[in-house]
Every structure is written in C-alpha cells, then in structure tokens.
Image 1 (cartoon, helix red, strand yellow):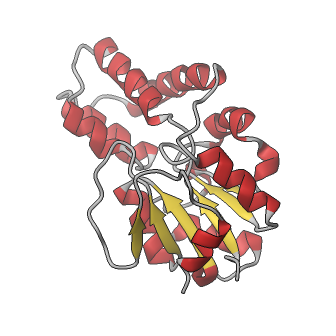
Image 2 (tube, rainbow, N blue to C red):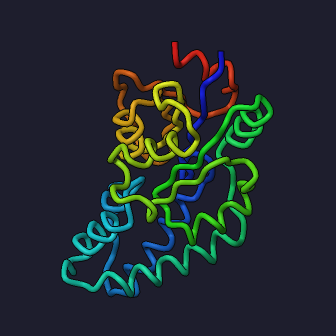
Amino acid sequence: MKPAAVLFDMDGTLVDSERIWGIALTELAARAGGTLSESARLAMVGTSSATSMRIFRDDIGQPDRPEAPDLAWLTARVRDMFADGLVWRPGAMELLLAVRAAGIPTALVTSSGRELVEVALKTLGAENFDVVVCGDEVKRPKPDPEPYRTAAELLGVPIGSCVAIEDSHSGVASARAAGAAVLAVPAELELEPVDGVHLRTTLTGVDPLFLAALLV
C-alpha cells in the first residue's frame, strides 16, 4: 500500500528557513524603530503573509503602519538569504527522494509566496514536486483547508489517501481539515498530541512504508 500522494510543507518542514524569516523580521522591526518579541515571531510561524504582517505591526506598536512597503522589503531580504542556499531539515531530503523513487506523487504546499518558493526550489529541486501550491495562489491560505485540497485536486488524487507533512499549528490544522493523514514534525513550535496527527521529532528514519502505515 502506498499513499496516493505525499504533500510537503516547506518552511520548517523540508528546510530550516524559519530561522531566516526570524532574522529578516528582526531586522525589519529595527528598521521600523521597534523590537520584535519572541512570542510574536513564533505566532507567525506557518501563517499567511497578511496574518504575519498584522502580528508584526501589533507587536511593534504600529498597527496602522502601511503593509506593502514592509512586505516588499521583507520579501527581498528573505529572497537574498534563500539564494545563498537552504539547509535541509534532518531526514527531509532522504524522505523526499525515497518518496520520488517509490513513484508516489508529491506536492509542495506552502504559505510562502511564489517569488520566494522559486528561489527555494533551487535547493529543493523543482523536479521533486509534481505540484506546487503557494500561499499567494489560494484565496484562503493555511489554516484553511484550501491549500491541501487544491494540491490533491491538481494531482487528481483523493485527499483522504494522502499524507501531509507539517511543522506548525496552522499547517496541521489546514491538512487535518482537508482530510489528509498528518505527520507533524515540530521545528520551532511545540505541538500537542491531537487525534489523527502523528508526531515525530524528526523525519530521520521515515520512509514510504512508514507513511503508508499512517493511512491504516
């Protein structure tokens, strides 16, 4: 038995890019004359750009600060750091390559925008994904189920036969609501046990047979 598809989150799941986002957001706060709290930074993990920027503005005490210039600066800064190369999360590259070798369809389902994803794919390998769903290409991003449902529809597979791999509350909620089996591998956030969600500390040792067992 194989999953109909494996749906991978990107930031914090496949690559250690949440650290990069943290650096860029801290720099942006300093440019704005403020300081970003750790609690606000963690609250942004896995969320859409609109939600993240609202949290950012509220946290630095500038709720009416224009969003567009900050988002443009942040995107450019993160893009430059992504271009230097991204570090794989433990076991992530091995699992992705094993899934591909097994002939299982794959999707990248991320809250990041297409501009940044295209840079990240230079590390991840665009050829490793049959479908890519970006945060700025859906009407309702994570935690809404739309991103994962969209990925399954584009692949032409039933979402209930898919395994989604996530690291954040927002992503787990999205995948669960869509109807996928969920493997959660926390990076920066602690995730509490939830019915239907399988927790592991890393992807090391996870293979297609392990993922298939999650569907039983």
